[in-house]
Length: 264
Image (cartoon, rainbow, N blue to C red; front, side, top):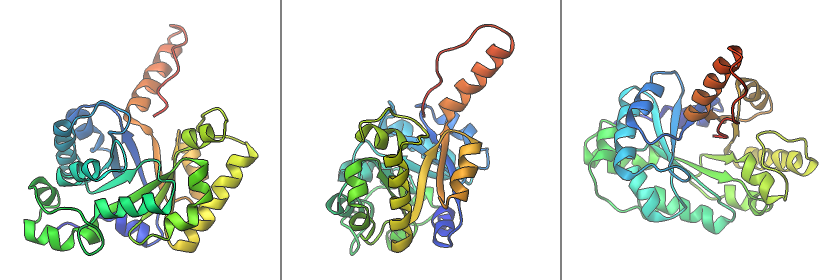
């Protein structure tokens, strides 16, 4: 059975960088997997990506040697199971705000005795190039579990959340976190409350031996976040990169300014 190199990197304290996939298209996933990102996360939560499309995308990503991840629609067993059973190597669980919700994520992502994920399916083992019995035996060791910290309630409960066994990383969603503070959603902010929250999350993650992560909009922001101690970084998305490049070309030809590019 293949090992999960992202999980291995985070355990060693090394950074791991990927991006979001927002387009419901296995071909674009296959193309993005040719780039040397460590991982690609399908943004199922907010985009129209169905189960069949997701399964084909996981397969294309894994075949290229990149780690396929999913952000399910919500923190429920059926959503997590559909991602993992169809070939994702891990999940990024949205809006985890309490220890109870963190425990629910762990239960959904792992087999007994760590969780209560049910046994079945075929594509999960195929994605890891394993026999089914081997997958069931070793999946708990290789599945990556990331919880999103994107609300002030999560910041308040961060130590309790990250104390739950099985969590590999926490991932800050800056837009949602700022919105929960009553601030304008943004990639970056100098709001004192926001900066204090980032510091608090990183401190708690370090105490619990969990990798801290964040979503950034550019290479410059990624370099800054790495210098600040973040390990698990998502840089924009394939849709954002596509639109940003188109905007750059059009403006260089003096064809006028374009609408704002996608946030993710």
